[in-house]
Length: 184
Image (cartoon, rainbow, N blue to C red; front, side):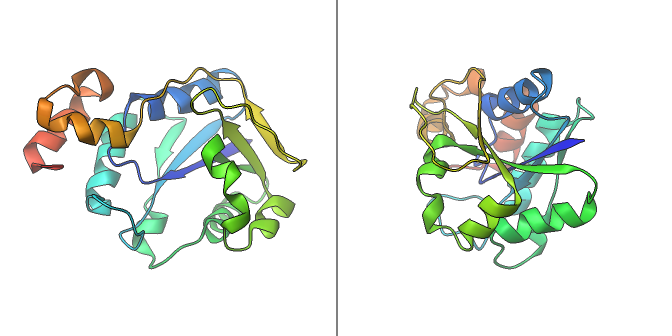
């Protein structure tokens, strides 16, 4: 089985996150996608609590048995990508583990802790962002031909005050944001 580890802040998780996972499965890049939201140690502005991001992902994915959500990085203090990939490899030792990342992450991979280890041991399934051309001299980078747009969590957070976000979020995620008064 081909399992994609889709890490990120998911602050909030939006329809493009879901479309990417579904498209990767439908186009046979992967058999299963595991969302792994970052923990609270991650240094990023306006990051809501990890438990809220985790629950929003659960709400967004509850309809599809091939898409699951893990709280691995939430339960652990500071977790690096290579540790997360190793963890899932230990859970699924007979399966291929892929790291799903945007092209912007591929550009920065040499700044990651133990990036060469990641490249030597795992495949990176890269998603184009902003119509980027992806050039990589790494042999284990696969560019997924999936349709994306420029939707981002940052853009959604910026529009929450204007109430212009309904078309970008699953109804359950939007209701959760309102109930918990997130991103105010």
